[in-house]
Image (cartoon, rainbow, N blue to C red; front, side, top):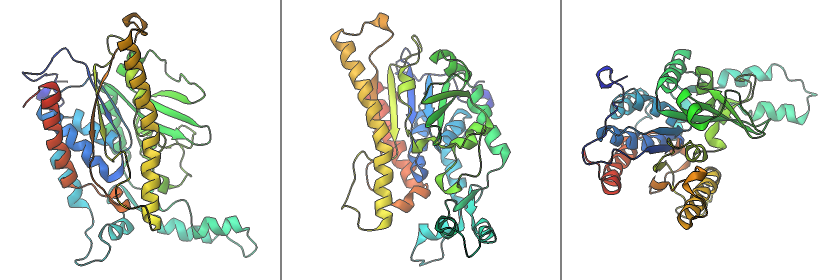
Length: 358
């Protein structure tokens, strides 16, 4: 589809290199998704059309909005307008909001909490008591089926290679959802699987699985599998972008990271700070391993140990990373300040690195 229907135009701006194949690697992380959305808004402003996009968690949603040619700043403002507001002078602003839920996204699982107690006897095992006192499910997703169907349609129908993931803890397999363009460029078949990965076509059920948070519990299954948000397992999908076949392999990969690569501030002193650090360490580990692979291949290409005939080529990595400290409860809140920070930094970075201007 073209620009006339509001979708992303196939246009490269004047001053930019039209021969470059560009890939976006977008990592999702709750409120940090506003950082990725700001980057995509800058790409819209510069009319950049990537050859491939990998995305995880909430960046799946923002990628669909981007491909649909929507005004991402307006989408964020609409989302913020729907969020519950803490009472004036409330001592715990974001925490108060989280207790109320996010309209259209999830609600507190209070009804489910009390229903579990009706199936408990005084002679129950300690685990059964723990399951009710501190259940895994604390929230219930409330998005409508049409929401997932619309996102899936956008991602599946574009000729840009798109991929996102979910993870199955019982099997240890990552499910990589890909559209037809990505399938052709990766050279894999539907339902192809290895001990650690399964390839499936993008679908509404796949989108829903890839947005399944820990806090939703594990009673809901997808494709008869216990799938959860893939960002918990691998926040960035870099390997497969590198594995796209020539001539589809990217020359430049923009990695947009919603958190810093190091812990900022004093070491944790309470439970929430500890959870914050656990999240950051977990998210950063899979990223660093994949980045090391890219750096190794680049060194071998430069040294001549890998020839162009091998299917490998040098990939220029460009990193746009959030700088600063956000607390545990900020994971749940997208803000326009974070969006603007990414937007302006991305405009400058794209102009500096690629020579593309609006």
